[in-house]
Length: 433
Image 1 (cartoon, rainbow, N blue to C red):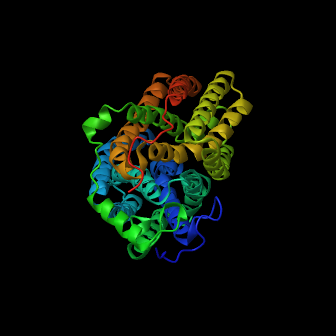
Image 2: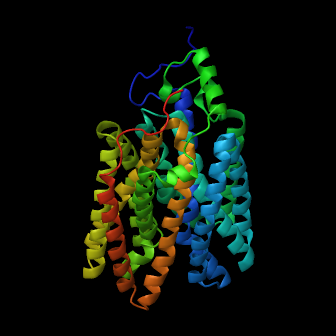
Image 3: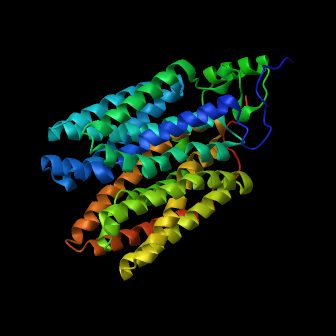
């Protein structure tokens, strides 16, 4: 059969074709712009607190509220994506986020600030886990690990470069960083309107840059339009692999949020100043950039399940070292823990969708992910409340509060490690048309 003209199909492990690379870059920016919402709170909460005299602990609590609201938003977004595909729900979400950024930056009322921030957190969490993962599932199968390795670098770029950029832009004007984020989001949304398609078949391509005939392309598009996944909510709740994915990655994400959102205060509690603490946050994030690719390569070389086991092991070690560092007051041990976390960041956002795609396949991933993501968001948000309670219980002894936090995170990481051995190497959902 005649083949659609396509650039160099599968000539190397990183040969995703022009369409594949464009999608990777698009998701890279989605990852970066959705992750900056949480990462930037390391500096924006302090800025608002200083400017308006608002209680920083109260502002921090809004993150938890937004996270829990994100459960419902993710469920709604995931359901819409299943029904109408991923393109337009994502684009509309991007325009809404741009508007919310502006409301957040220009608000001088605590009520408006709270509403804007809560909605930003909720919607950005949903986009970060629903939209990005669904796009990568649609476009990549056999090369999903490598493709995700490049795309998820965006999350690390957020912490490494955008957080310091936000701090610098505050010196230009208080609203400058918020305007910048809104403008970039709008530009990206317009690019998606005129260029992006939900499935590679709609652009004459195929997952992983494989050749495809016109007949096969038309058949796949028709199947996607008509396909009804058997994985209903009831069936998912009875599926063991579904719960394994939720618990493993939910617990790991609890560790990520617990570490990253309070990394600067934690290092300052050990005696480092603000500049030094921000430096280590940046270093950890920079480490995550090449680590994203290395985790993707690991995924491709040894398999997604084994790569997930290695990630859980590394994460558990980092939590143990963080606990030891806080208990002994050792900056050196704490910094080693930060470096391992930086390396782990590159794998967490990579392996969660990769493992989900492997288990549920290209056709059923959307139906599974629309429920996996809200529950994972709920778990990772819960650590904000738990962390606040532990730090409050410790009173003025911040070191004690952080030490107790890492006892909990070590236990959760160890549970994730044990459960990771029971993940499936086989796809239980539909893979091909």
